[in-house]
Image (cartoon, rainbow over all chains, first blue to last red; front, side, top):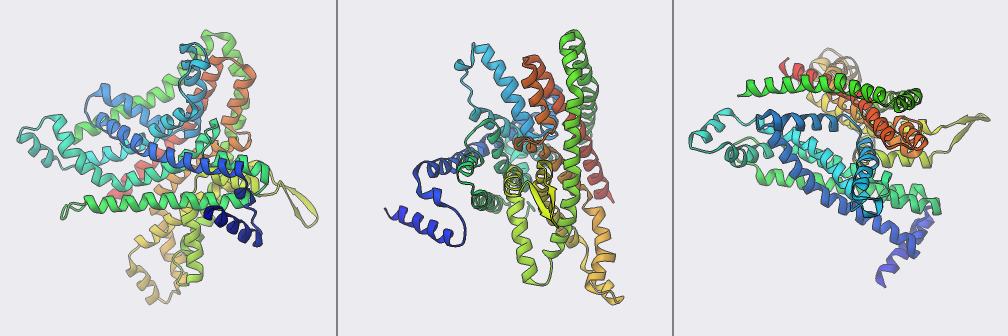
Length: 248
Length: 260
């Protein structure tokens, strides 16, 4: 009850300065809009771990020194970095998704939703950006450190897991946070294939209400807040993980 | 070991370029020739796709010009000694640097009118100009940050020296500091250029006739899966051919500036 009163107050106050938020007190459109915010937040929460895991995997392949592992990943990274995410998404959705549909015999049997494709495409796109950052970090690990680890009997894989990755992650953290901010912004491409994230939900509202400016103010504030939070958390993690005297 | 990896990477880069700029066009050509009906369709639609791509380049360049002009001014304002100038500029950069490009394109497209009345004349305000403004806004926010960083990277001794020679603050900025910033901010500026160039494909979502939109048009008109595949491969290849050289040049410049 308290909640609806607050919304009514907000609607009335903003109305007085000429902003039209009346849809908030109506049921259906307010519901769509709220779900849009939740979908975007859900996408972000899901995509951050997905992109980091694949980024680490790609970086491990890139620095493995085995051509059959690094060459395909390098090609994937370069293609991903140099083509628009929207084009990748449309390509995946129209070509790969149709191929999968034909494979399983009809679109009704296809288990892959537009939501899946957004997560896959944006996740792998940002993973490719992560991979470049982590690779640079791994290559920046002093060779003396790696040799010392080899000297006390670490295998190649153990060196990667216990020596190179912990140091590389710390060194590449600023770049990773930058990529994550990019990731938050990229979730909006889901709009193109009707994933009802915030921009898609907003279009539904403003085509009915003609209140683009009002919705834009909230959307811009929303993304600014998420990205500020991501940057803050990144800085906090950076400080937590810092090794005193090591310089990173 | 580092020599070996860098050599490996050079080889991987060379083979990748070979694959992207020789093998892929050859593969598309072979496919188009092997299935002549497909080849004919592709040939028929290529001018349409090319006209779309020209729009991408036009939007990207215009947005970068606008964004650079506005961005440099904002970057300087962010360092102004007056709060009244500094705070609004900082707010602008903070909000628009964090905003998705798509949201800004939607904002400009739906908020701006489709024509402007100026001295009694109706001036058309087409969608592609709105999309350009939508991309110029984040570009200006990034470039403001780049400008600020570049100005800060110039040693303060230079300001003092300029003051000693009788330059005013503004004169020192204009004639001594900014010219040096140009060189330092070139690599990050080119990163923004690549990012904005890729962002132009978002304009297809508001109905601007650009490459992705053209490919969608073509594939709905032809209604063949193999044509859809080849059309989107052409789109990817076009963007790659545009953005990959920019990225390579950026990295080369970064390396050279680091050495200097």
